Every structure is written in structure tokens, then in C-alpha cells.
Amino acid sequence: MLASFSAGMLKLYKRPAAWGLLLVALVLSQIFNYLVPYAGYLSADNERAAEQILASTMPEYLISNSIGGFPLFAGALALTLGVLSVGSEYSFGTLKTMLIQRPRRLTFFAGELLVLAVAVLAIVLSIFALGALTSYTIATSLSNSIAWPSLSELARGVASGWLILMTWCLLGAMLAFLFKGMAMPIGLGVVWILGIENLIVNVAAALLDFADTLQVGLPGVNAGSLVSALGGRSDAPGVNTAVDGTQATIVLVAYAVVFVLIASVALQRRDVT
Image (cartoon, rainbow, N blue to C red; front, side, top):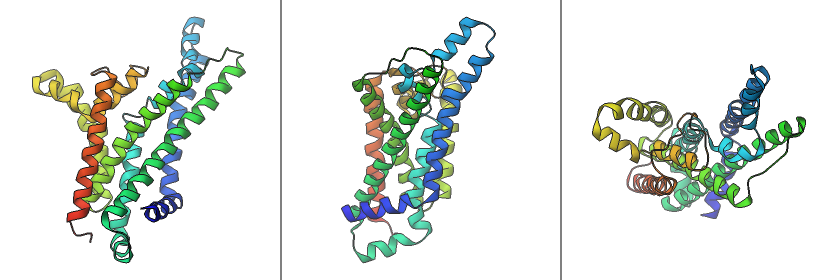
């Protein structure tokens, strides 16, 4: 497994698309969590409104700012990462060659999961680190007092953010194993995250009782609820209070396990060509 992991990390490190996804995630987090609010602070009509806007960019809100976009936009990027990492092996025809040479299918699969776990953790830590730098810069430039979240709160925030993005990433990997490619899995995954779940939550749930009950079991809804439990802004896209943080965590873990099991069965039992 270590050999598969090392090879997978090297492959991901040298893939421009992976760095592109990281860059997009960082840019989006900075624009919507710090640059837009700061511009709103500068253009606010009255001092009270300006102070309220500015307060949202301070270091004490690092956790909620960092993971606020995870249920939707960063989640879609994580799903794309999972698809690219797995689907490229089918698209380029390298999976069959690699399995013929040495590793068993489950050994390759375990190494691939570890690669994705490390990559997602790197994305989460990068977003937190850049957010901390930006919020610190804003606070010091205005001579505001600085209050950081505690280490335990930061650890919980990072772990929760990793769980959310890893769940979406595993969904992408599972779809790539099922469809043996990249185009269809990315299309289906992004449509689900940005379209279908929103329709269920915002349209069907208001009209149909079973849809209202169904929504509390959706991965995106539980991801948004977990962000909300950690102090995420209720006006952020995808953030909600449909369930509590404990249930959201359990549901996301369950989805992650199911995605892993389905992907492993697909790799184990189907032809790789």
C-alpha cells in the first residue's frame, strides 16, 4: 500500500489540475470571506453597519469563514479532485498496466484513499492558514484586538471541514469507479451538489411531506448543518440548521463508508478496461 500511496502522491503532485483546484478553492475563500466583506465595510453607509461587516472578517471567526463554503462550492471542487484522481487512471489506460505489474486491486484502492485523504487535509489546512493570515492582516492594519479560536476549536473545525470535503471527494471517486472515466462523474456530481439537492430542499420540501423528511438525510444538508453547528453564517449558501452537529457528523461518516464500499466493490468485481 505504501508504494501505491507514494506513486499516487507523486502523480497528484505533478498534476496541474490538482494545483488548479487548490488555487480556485483558496481564491474563492478569500474573495467571499474577506475581500467582499472588507469592500462592504469600506462602502457602508453608516458606522454601525461598517463595524458589523468588519467584525465578520476578524480572527475569532476563522473557523466559520474557512468552512462556510464547504457544503457547496469547495465540496464541488473536492468531488472533482476525487474524480480526477481515479477517473484519469481509466481515461489514460494506466490502471490496467499498473495492476498487471504489481499491486492487487484493494492495495491500489487503499493507497488511493490515503492519497485523497492527505490531499483533502492539505486543502483544508491551506484554506485555514490563508484565512488566518488575511484576517490577521485586516485586524492589525486597523489596530483591532485579536482573539483567535482555541486549539480545541481549531482542531474540531479542521476535522469537520476535512470530513465534509472528504465525503464529497469519496463521492467523486466512487462515481469515477462506477463510470470508468471523468466527464460523466464530474457532471453528475456537480449537478447533484449545486442543483438536485437545492431543488429538493428549496422546492420539493416545501410542497411534499416525504421530500421534507428526505432532506435531513442528504449529504449536502448534513454538511451545511455541521458548518452551522460550528458557527457558520446562516446566510452562507448551503448552510442550514436542519439537524444538529452530532447527527450531521454521523450521517456524513455513514455516507463516506458507503461510498468507499461501493467503490471497492466496483473496482474488485468489474473489468478495469
